[in-house]
Structure formats: structure tokens, C-alpha cells
Image 1 (cartoon, one colour):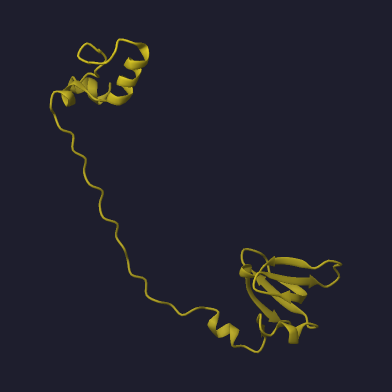
Image 2 (tube, rainbow, N blue to C red):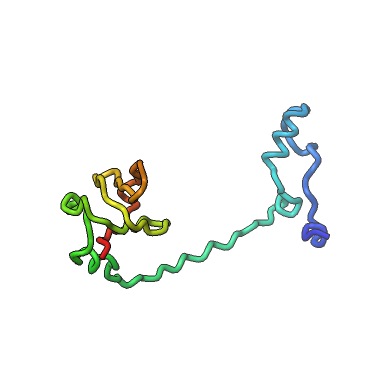
Length: 138
């Protein structure tokens, strides 16, 4: 049993009190406009909705970036220093992927990062934003 049936509220289905035309389309339009208005609501009962609670915002303490200490290391290759390490084997860390070991950087621009895995014929191109870090192999 629905809540409306328990309280005695009935949906308004008759169009005798409406002032629209007596056509199928006009009655359908009237039903859509009235929606789920019940007899009690149409008699003047008000329906009030509770306001949504305000979202709680927690302040997050600033944490130092994890990679700040890593980029100062001499074993890290950056976009500015990749040309001097062009012929050296590196490990490439790309977001959401496994690290690529024994690779060589063939290009690193603002948009793309290119590398060649040892033993492969073709280089691989990924967006430069996805490169987390590149480190020299020992």
C-alpha cells in the first residue's frame, strides 16, 4: 500500500475542473503539467522540502611534493637535460603504467615524449604530461 493510499490522498485524474479544450492532446498536456499533484495538495496543503545540508569542507594541510627531492638528484633526467643523456639507458615512469626499463630517450618536447626500448625497431610516443619521471640506470 502506498503512502497516498494510507493517508487517503488521491491523484487528480478528472478534467471537469480544468478550463482547457476537450481534446486528447489538451488533456495529456494538462496531466503532464499537474504531475503528481494530489487532492490534498490542490486543496491548499503546502508541501515543504527540507533544505539540503551544507557540504562540510575540510582544510587539507599542504604537503610537500614527493618529486621535489627526486628531481634534484643527479640520476634524474628532465626535459631540459635529456639530450646529454641521449645514449644512456634509463627507466621511464609513466602514470598508470609499469616502469619501462632499458630504454633510451629519443625526444622530449612540451607535447610528446619519445623513447626507444632496447631491442625494438620503433620508438614509442606518449603525451609528455603522462611522464612521471625518468631515471638513469645504474
